[in-house]
Length: 64
Image (cartoon, rainbow, N blue to C red):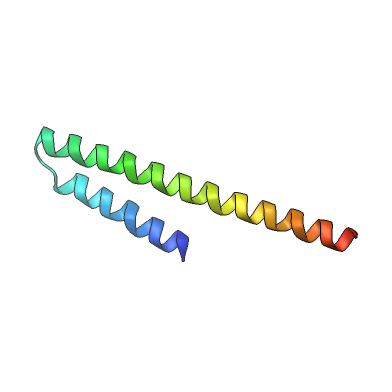
């Protein structure tokens, strides 16, 4: 599901670049793309940390 949403967002950004004809609009779209990429990266990092900490807890429980 997360990959699907990320794909849709990237597709929308690519389409917006194709439609954008003026230099100011392209700059605005690129800035928005960078912001969205940062948010997606932060979200993925949070998810990975959650999975890693969940695995650590499971490993500790099974070791006890």
